Image 1 (cartoon, helix red, strand yellow):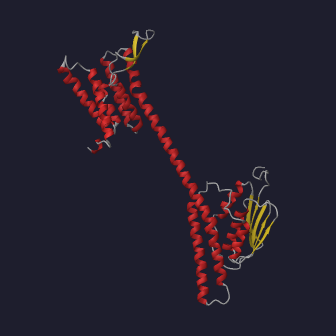
Image 2 (cartoon, helix red, strand yellow):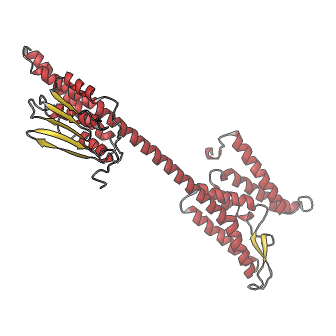
Image 3 (cartoon, rainbow, N blue to C red):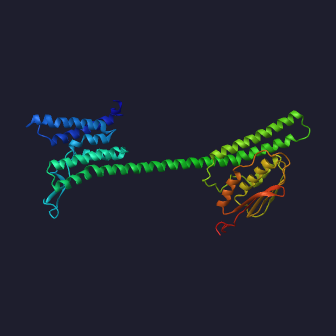
Length: 384
């Protein structure tokens, strides 16, 4: 019986008041307890007990409460929401539309809750039972055509319309919940993509420079075999860490998420200086004009790829107002990483969003990464 327990005192008070109001309406529909106590005991008291059961189970199963309240439904066709003149269609002039009884508001409430909380085939089966009861009530009353009109409008107004309102409310809440979950999922994907970009731009570049330093130390003269072996192990460990980082980035990265156009705040000259300090041979040709906004991202990707795939190769960086080129010569040592990273794919997306073009491929035994960007106010080739 734990399913009948209320979660708070407020729910207990609410249901108690609901039952008292429903019982008062039931008593008002039946015989007078003073003038006819026997009829009150045999007719009204069982209905009050039935109302108590309906309220007891209605919080969790409103459809069951709706079925239990069937004997208290709008089956008296003498009173209605409106009276219309249908003499042009029916023998009777005054026809009751949407017949009402004292318990109709309670039945409408449970019909609304059924639409809000109950899914599946059970509502259809319950409504079939309700229709059968309505048909029986009309046949018992004589089967007059006016009674059929009253019964149909009563079923629609007391049961169907509140149920449809509850169903609409449930669908709207589900749609709102799905929209909220979708927005939260998109936010998580964007955050994962941001983390992946930050990891690639910072950790990936730094690991590549560590591998370059270790490779240079491994080939340095004057080291004994143990020290050279330790430097080689450090180079291999940095290469393995770079591969694991690439796998993590692959899990975090969301291809549908647009890459940002704003690079990390660092000057291109400072980036080249850090790479030189790690042992890379870099020639920087920087024009006097404005530096493109994507210059740092292009240079960082080019230097990272050169450090990983062409250790010891000289690198030339050329930066103009509309063109950025990073070109390295043939590798002089074994590459520290395997091909297939995501850096070029992310950079290509950044360049595309800036209406530029990116070309990358072998050049004179080495590799060249070149980016062309449109001038300010000029359309890129994709928009021309």
